[in-house]
Image 1 (cartoon, rainbow, N blue to C red):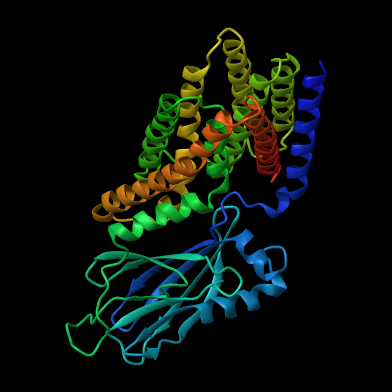
Image 2: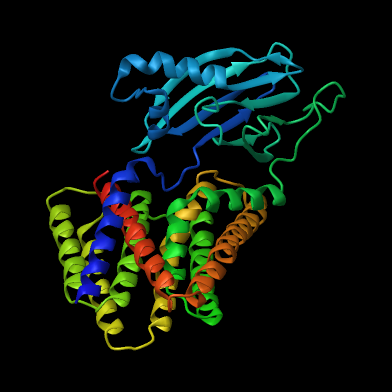
Length: 412
């Protein structure tokens, strides 16, 4: 009894600590924006899309504070630029806000080049406040060819070459290469703290290499499937609901860890199901970003899952199945980066393959760094007490993060 109370106190302290620090933890730490360019004979028409949340880094909100629109207009004109033969192309039509999906700020404008023919796109958008910011530029050339590039602090320019075939323009860039997309996938998993948290929650109770292989394989196959479906446009789920479900997956697996490490009290599954049903009721009243049927489905899933776990002594297969099920959700989360780029068919395969390979390499790096350490703790002195404490505290902390992300995304 005393041991169970100790575990409960440790878990509660871990969750409270994480809940306190969570507002400073960003699930997808990578800052993103997008632009679409239609190059003409003497300039270009450009559309820039940026998440409204990103503009809060500058303490401006052009939707709630119309007076800040001039600041946003100036920011875009100075940060997202076109030059030709080294000469800036000034705006012929000033940046103008247009309606778009909720949560996005979209501006359109046009530029005219004094010396047209060798366009070079430059983006330094938000780099002064977010050095890891990525800007995705999609370009349609006068002959209908589409190119795209990922611009960052390391590479702020995208040279399109001499359109007329002359020699005085900058050398052309084919856009982001396969290696570039692999690097992008690695960076995305490295800054996708919610995905890392989910993998860590799975690893905490993996006792053998075979269990690790089953978990990683199930998660990989599932998220690769939905990543492809989303990027190819076959399925386009609501992004806010997907992000909320990712938070839920983290909290549920971490809570399951604590439940398995403890005395499997009935209170845990009851609290999970009751909480989800309460959120479903709030959704019916028009509160929250996740539909009531989805929350009811999660409640049924959670209740059944804990019921099955209670009947087995070694839950490794069930955990692998859960890794696959939630991997489908995480795949939609991975897809957001590529889906927003609206890539041409000729570029989709390379981008999708490279990005997915990068995600897998990043994921395997996490496994390779963490799991051997956990096995060492399990074999170390103290009859496995170090490992047990690590698993308990780690699960409590990850559960706190998952709950924070889930609740804030449901009501965000």
